[in-house]
Image (cartoon, rainbow, N blue to C red; front, side, top):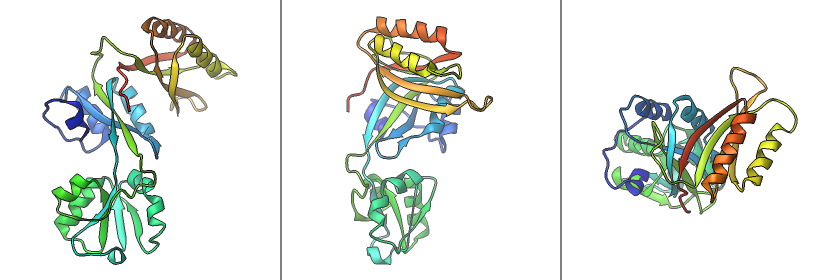
Length: 255
């Protein structure tokens, strides 16, 4: 769905995991990758930051997809006949309040939303429901029992567009990674410097540095009006950080 909205034309190569997606770009089997990075309800998909870093991929764009979760099953059933619902953990998390009203339904994590909808159709599974998109219900001929069951109706997932190298000349947003000395005030100094350079910090995440317990890598998204101010900030971070890396530079996608 994101590829359809973002690209004018393309040939789609399915990747069963996020790591397979990263490998596909790294091996130049794919020109672009479309990777989910955060959801407005469930938060960030932290392992994907690590994959982008590990495979030296470059973020060249972003796209927001409106998420509507629907409860579906084989036709002719009612909610009191459904005893089990399977879906991706994120989908279950985003719809948890809805299922509080149906304590008889057992919730089970599966690897993918649409994939389990397909399984219900292929195996003719009665008494079992899936949480998936309207498109999935149409593709697999399932009946929607309830529409838009996500807890927060304004639910968006942010995707990043990945390539093997930088391709953008014009940009006003960047994704950075840096590791600092493990001492008091080091992170505050960087954040204050970003403010002094008129950069707007829109996101910050931390992940442990596996080789060094107690040390963290910081992943930040920043926006700016002046590329000169951004370049000045980059030079300062390069000096004070133990490790510094640009993960992407691209144009902001308005919500």
